[in-house]
Image 1: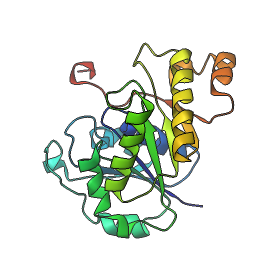
Image 2 (image 1 turned 30 degrees about the vertical axis):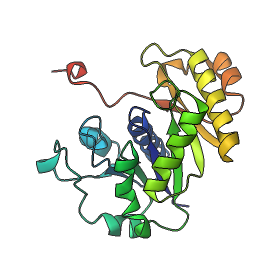
Image 3 (image 1 turned 180 degrees about the vertical axis):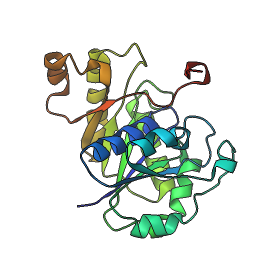
Image 4 (image 1 turned 90 degrees about the vertical axis):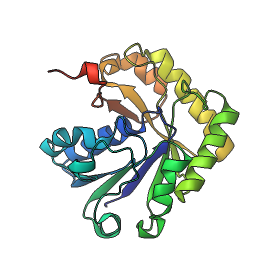
Length: 226
């Protein structure tokens, strides 16, 4: 059954990478997938920047036109309401990383299909979410602006290329504690793909939680091959 899944969270939580990898995971299962770039505020690290890679793997990309690709303006994709309401297959939505960015989704909430799932991405290593009190406040502010109550959390605590299983374990414990406060489950855990080979250690750290193995697609300008 097709589903609309909305990923929101604070700037720097990794929600765009999570959105991209989740959409690709669904596509590799043979599902029809559309990813919607609603990050209309932040000019860096947006889904639209890897449009060609996504299209190559069969993921339809809905984003502002190329002519405003790098605009730091709240520009919405054409036909977004129709796509959210009537688009075929699974739809993955990447929302801007603060209450202001999330407000873009709030203006479209009447276009969301019934049953749309909001998942808040938690990175306990980022500012304003390093304590449970901060993280709880962030969830409330962002999801209220988005107009979509969260149905679950995504644990995505990491240290970039230095991430070890201990960081994944700490992040999951943090997200589970936050979930107990909010009455929300942790529905998936972001895990850098290079840790997949450490199967036994990883299984112990996840203790049954669902991993989402993450490849890096959003690169800094100096990391992009010429």
